[in-house]
Length: 287
Image (cartoon, rainbow, N blue to C red; front, side, top):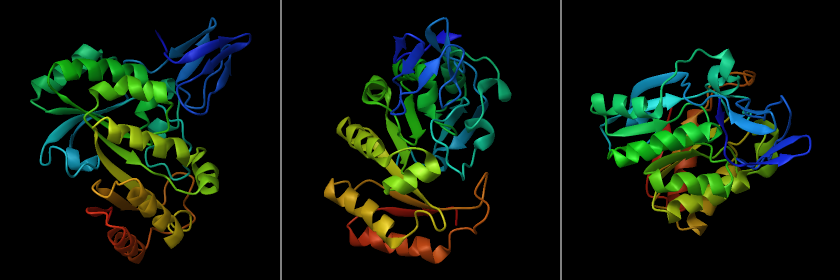
């Protein structure tokens, strides 16, 4: 096991400082992401070096439509997520502990070597929540950066400032999934708050990271005109109209199967709202 970063010891365990949950983890226990464990008074990253998913994807699948378009990226993932979205599309790897998913041991050096051997220009940390396997992502990203490869983050952005700042020097592009603008909705359905995510988007923008944003419009949850308007107004208020915005169509999955897919009319209306706020590029996904 690899000792984790970003925690402090307590009398009865540790406090994880990776994300805003600040999980208080007692001896032998794990955090909300299931992949960080307290043992012998220390916090360990259980999924380090154990990718459960590895593929070569078109970069547009991330989705990133305006970063190295037409190229492919090495996409990798370990188990773990610090959110609990009821409609999770990858619940079989994001909502389970590392030992519950099939994996192979791959060192950061081997991962970068694989990318170079295949002639791929970038590495994407994706499918689950990469910040929950921060140490592995960081070690690969630093080596990839030295090798002239680009690093792509696909994330919900729910992380504390120190871990974010620790990866920013190596980060070239990111797609951040904004779950909802409403605090109550976001907490009820995803177990998180939108505010840290919005702050982190601004930090990435300031650091010069190429950004694209995704908003999955879930039927009856976050697809109201008010929530769409709130998102677009926030982007306009923060001068982010040049950032591509992806509205994606929801399909029933995981623990949220009682409603139908997002009506296409909802996505078309969302695009109209975004354009009225001056957002220059709007993509509709999953249609």
